[in-house]
Length: 269
View 1 (cartoon, rainbow, N blue to C red):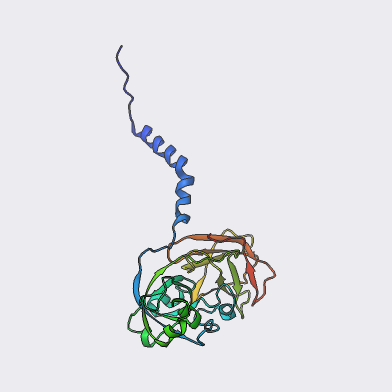
View 2 (view 1 turned 45 degrees about the vertical axis):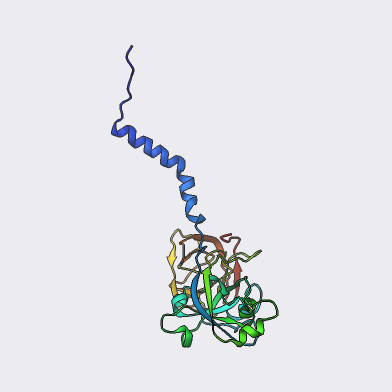
């Protein structure tokens, strides 16, 4: 009795590939959100400090976070960066580890800082990578008891790397900026775990399937002109660094008001 050899036709191959894709689709779709912003390489930069020696940093800043920088989890962890990291405001919210190098005064621990401001001149100019840290964050890089001595040096050489932002117990929130109307809606993203930065934002009106593109205004602020816009609004944000996306359904209610903050039930971690 002779053996039977299967015939591989184009149709057979097509259905085999289709079945494979369908079977593995859930895993393929899940692969995107697993990307992280962690960079294990350290890069050279310089750093200075501003404000009071043990201070938390300045209120507000070029990102538009306002008084948030004075309270936890931002408090004492804020910093300004040169334009190369500020990225015209799209670098706002990103987190970095910064470590000084002089072993005679520097500890092994790094200061983790959240970008809330831009430093456009001086050491920050000329395409250099520079961190202008709060007095507290700068002193955190020193051996215990030597924070003042490290600050006395003024400008120091450091190394830095990106690190995921972590806000334990916090979900992403959307602050409706002052001046917003049904014809001009402006939002600020708060407490974004992971990448921390925002590459694009879209909103979807009530009873609509269409996502409307928002425009980057300045710092961490985004807006849309149209209308009248009808809430409640769902918000979809995509991170700048890794392109991870998150959609918060009906997070902004129909009776929203300017200067109010609406918290979602989601975050990237």
